[in-house]
Length: 68
Image (cartoon, rainbow, N blue to C red):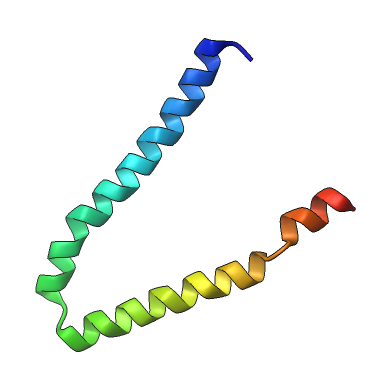
């Protein structure tokens, strides 16, 4: 792979991560203003639960695909 091609691919990943973090930074004050303390806590609980469920669902799947 050439250096130029590598830098193009790297820039795509970099800007995607940067945009994701910027969106979180922008949405945080909006959500804290719109939602009550209880609603914000429920949203945080749901997000945390979803992250854990995705991690459990994906656990070892890529290794199994590569292995067999």
